[in-house]
Image 1 (cartoon, rainbow, N blue to C red):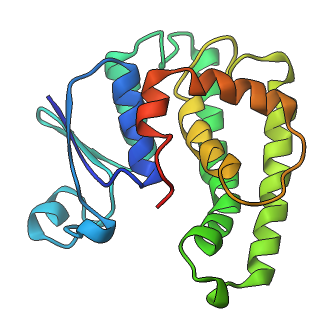
Image 2: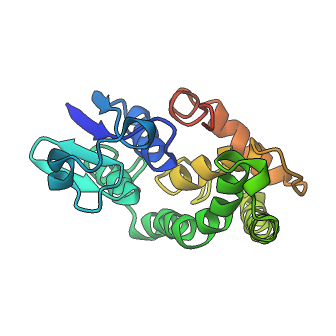
Length: 206
């Protein structure tokens, strides 16, 4: 049985849990991080010296870093499903996972932190405004990309949709103004129809 260490409100844990559920795997999750603490315990540090969630264990295999966990599960249990067998299709999915890491989530992160985890009187409004602008630009790019595609890497769900989908849920559930993004909205509705996404991603933001 797969074991995952991490709290349900962590976007990085949500990526792993959505993937595991999408693949129909049996799993056990341990509450670690945030209010639960535990990331400085010697037993956890022995698994992940970075002291961050998630950590995934599958038999003798131990993986940390959320995208590495998603790739491991997709490659091991989702051949030609979440993990496309054709190298070009797989590269397309991988590309959007990297884009989520380098562009989308860094843009969105300050907005989320300022609005969800910072008291109103302590918010940095200039940081918030800059983050909202960069985030809107990133999602506009994604919206344009989805204009003639059902999913980020083509006509079916792949690992590429996972980190982007998790970030999109957060973005669309923040109390902010957003541009009209019709193709993003269409794609997002298809994610919301998936039980694994609803269960593991569509949770309260705090």
